[in-house]
Structure formats: C-alpha cells, structure tokens
Image (tube, rainbow, N blue to C red; front, side):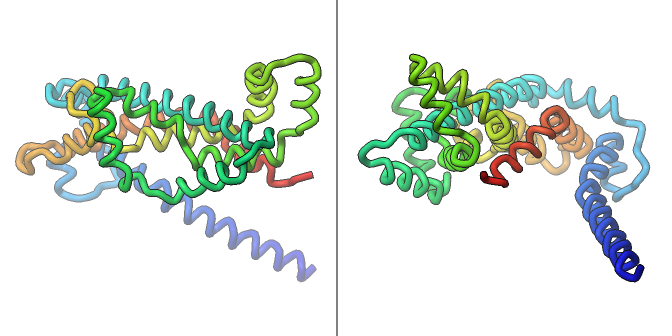
Length: 281
C-alpha cells in the first residue's frame, strides 16, 4: 500500500514538472499572439495578458507595407524550405545507401571523411561558397539556397544509422536477384522502408531552412527574392522612431504558421522516426 502511495506521489510530481515546463515553453507563443493583436503604443507600455483589437489592422498594415513584400517572402521561404528538405533527404539517403550496402575500396575513408565534414561550421566555408556562387553566376538566386542542401553530412549520418537498424540486406539482395536495377531498388524498396526516418529528417531540414538567416542574408540582394528571416530582420532594423512593433509581432506570427502546420500533420512521423531503430533485433 505504501509503495502504491509513493508511486502516486512520484507520478504527481512528474506531471507537475511536465506541466510547468509546458507552460514555460508555450508562454513565448502566448506573448507573440497577444502582441500581434495590440497596437505599437500598447506594446510599448508593457506586457498584458489580454489580447487587443488591432489584429486585422496590424495585418492590413503589414500586407500593405511597400518595403516588405510579405506574401512574396512567404512564397520564397516555402520554395526554398521544401526543395531543401526534399533534396537533402533524398540524396543523403542515397549516399547512405551506397556506403551502407556496397563494399568498395575506400569505403571507410569516405565514411570518416563525411563525418569529419560535420565538424566544420558553416561560417568557415562561407567565403569560398560566396566566391563560387559569383563565379558560376548563381549569386542572388533562390537556387543557391537549396541546391547546396544536397550535401548534408548530418542527414547522411542519421540515415546511415537508420539503415543499419531497419534495412535488411536480404531484401535488397532478393530484389537484385529478381533483376531490379539499383535506382529502382532504392526508389521502390529502400525509401518506403526508410519512410519514418526520411519523414523526420525532412521535417528537421524544412525547419532549419525556414529559420536560416545567415546564408540567405549573404546570398540574396533583391527585395523580391528575400526570405522570411531576412524580411523580419529588415522590418525590425528600421529606424527606431518609425518601425511598428505590432507589425514585427504580426510578421513573426505569420512566419510560424507553416511550421505549426507541418508539425501538426507530421507529428506522428516525428515520433516514429525518432524511435525507429531504438530497439535493434
């Protein structure tokens, strides 16, 4: 009886801690949504838990701002994020499949080299990357933001680990015996088997590309090609006497809507993808 009471106490404490952490995690979103409904003057007075009545006026002012093409920026971010997610997961999975499934000279060297590239920060190679884009005339293009996503050592490593735990060699060998070529095996057998892992990496890649500010700020110069993070920074860095804080909150609120939608529709894939391979037979 005493053991049951102790168990109930521990469970109650765990729930209290989890609820507290949830409140702390969701509080910034609550502040964001509330401030998106208030005017600039009201926001400057301080925080209020009560929403205002300026939601639609803030939205109208933001969408009519000639210096901030909001809808175009949303379209650019969606294009770049979707293409980055598709390219990085597909080609990283293909690379992982090649190194995992084939035995060739230099296999271990190639694997360790890719892992070593994970240790190199993006900032270190940025100068050479920009010079390359200028040389091949891809500077100030959206393609320069998603084509390099083909090479992703982090996604490769995750896919390689997932294949080790959930891709049976016997299935691939049986398909080869039946006469399937390697491209068909990869597209029709490997990808469906790796769907949970691919889904979770697509989500992470989408979010990472959506929030990326550093590279787009260096590559993109044209106003109509800028992405959401650049536009938010541009709106926020306006003259202190002129910029509208209500528009900033409204813009951020619009920017997180696609991320929320992606999470709501693919949350099960996140859970199954993260847990895939946790139990290895």
